[in-house]
Length: 495
Ligand code: BES
Ligand code: ZN
Ligand code: ZN
Image (tube, rainbow, N blue to C red; front, side):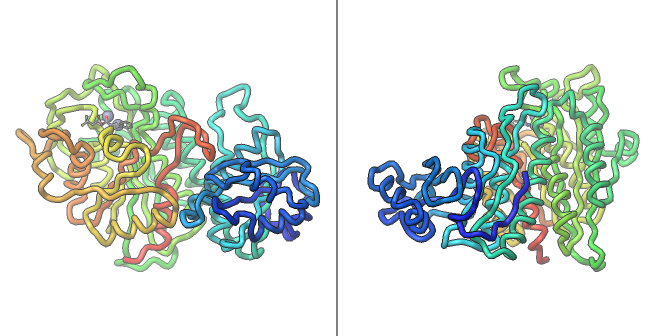
């Protein structure tokens, strides 16, 4: 989809559909909408008075052949209450408009800014909304979900320079997010650890990033015993994917951000096997890794001032004849011994070695993203990402990034009282809690053992990385959550 910035006034834009939004309040025919009402000879006021146009969130009101406008249609999207209107709402409205119009065969649309926000950030949010909404999970379908495609979107009513900058940034972010979503949606037979590594390396090559793929020999030499313990149950070998972005001007001693992502390309649970019901969804257990690879894709173009490294341990978790068994004791790369009491708590095992390796590569700040626990779904449902952090200042900065990126994230505790959950009986630590409750925190406490004193944040995206149902603004399947937040964190980083 091509996205352009229009110079003409709204009534003069010749397009299949002119789109803007209406707030839910008494005087909703105001500003830009009042101008459209005047141009259309009072049609909008009449709709508002009849009760058809209320402004309720994501309400769609479509007018055909509106008089006085060069556009063939006018779509008014409900914006909800004006005091609750954010950039996240704008992103969703743009997305919902695109999905609404494309099912109706619209090829070209123009999104008209409202008087409240005509800045670069608004243009960026609209661009992101449109591109994220255009993504379909129909790669393997002979008959595409929406063979109908929007070819062109135009942003109207903005200052041209602000809009162009916003479109440029929005495109980089949304295309990187869609790149991650495509990887996440891939089934495990088409995306093994080796294929994920190849896809990451190809992306890095195109983007001009350094990339190193550690194979099973190298992983063994480095004594990554926790990663190997998960991989040994599968005939597919593991990979450790390392991508580096290094700006020319980075000084020695400057902060280095490491992004560590869980990439279990399929999680059967191993010998502690999962029930078959819903197991097919465990192809998305590599969402954390794919998200980190997508972040690097965006950073290659946005060029932050700091060095960023991405470390993605990739493996299957299978119950093969060589699989590890409950009670087995493994030695992680850091030297810590781990009692594996449940082979389904495998994400924390592979991340342990990912975190240790990231520190070995010089990380001063760590963020990991993982579909780590079902317990985070109990705590926060599929609405918020769970945020666990060892350093309040660092965590606060990530939460600020999440707000700017329009992604919902919520802080969770990792204080020392939880440490005893993972105290080992026969080894240093065990991979599941011994008490009841706090499953997501237990997973985080395990990871914290490997981050040690390095400021660290863990994002549990098990509940938010996958949409079970279509949203008006997004297709069901992979969401690509956390990517925009992490890009923002790297772009705004101050050590
Ligand atoms: N990949 C799962 C977590 C998960 C659950 C992701 C639901 C997406 C949706 C993880 O490896 C896992 O199996 N965790 C166990 C941990 C338990 C054994 C302590 C869980 O959450 O049940
Ligand atoms: Zn598991
Ligand atoms: Zn898992």
